[in-house]
Amino acid sequence: MANGASQAPGTIEARGAMLGDFEVMGAMPPGAVAAAIERDRPFFVARPGFHRKLIPLRREADGTIFSGGRYLFGTYDQALDFVRWFRDEFRLDGKLFVEREWVKNFTRLPFHVLGAHDFADVHDAQVVVRAQRWTLEGERGGMLLERWPAVRERAAAAGLASVWLLFSDERREAALITVGKRVGRRDPAAPDFASLAALEAQSSVAAEIDREVWARRSFDRAGWVFTVWFPPTHAPLHLWPNSPPLPGLEPAETAQGRATAK
Image (tube, rainbow, N blue to C red; front, side, top):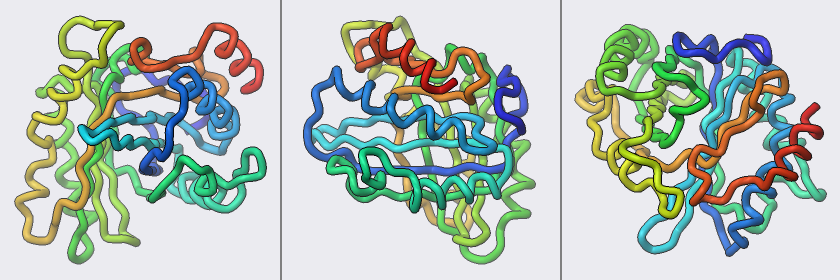
């Protein structure tokens, strides 16, 4: 899929994905968080085949913060190339991403996309996101692909905004990304716990994978969508669906970011 192609509801024409996760260490003033993330965006969205990135944000009861990225690319090879570039080449202020003092236990996992579908306008419905992963015994790609139509139908019936079914034959791993809409009225003074809780409580639309003897659930984490990135030719270039109350960009920072991306 070429950069800047339509992202209207329907089948997502992406065949590669990457899931990244890390623990956020230390403390950063809330107002500085969005600006720090914005410095990375122009470099990431310019990579070949970049389609979309959702940045999740989750804060546990003990104060631990998790973030990462849910990426889509036009092809699997483009996702692999992005992983290599991100791991070995991308430096900001002379540091690789894993060398930043606030990044701990970072993982980057490339996947094939078996199916991906948006059920609502990507510009106003991407509010919370959940990532689930399973380790598999044996070669199961064909079985997972056969399950995609049922997964997609259940996601539509559940009222989700988006669903992606992913697979890695190299690591024998499956993954499911589900994106939830807002539940109830938006409150700019408080985090949207209702929407997050609703997505966490929802039965997995790929529940049959849990029932298979050859699959074992290895990861399950939901969070708010902190920001969404699009290719350089897309308008808008990025969204901040939970700001406020989560930090977002000031108007001047947004304008600067768009000029940099061009």
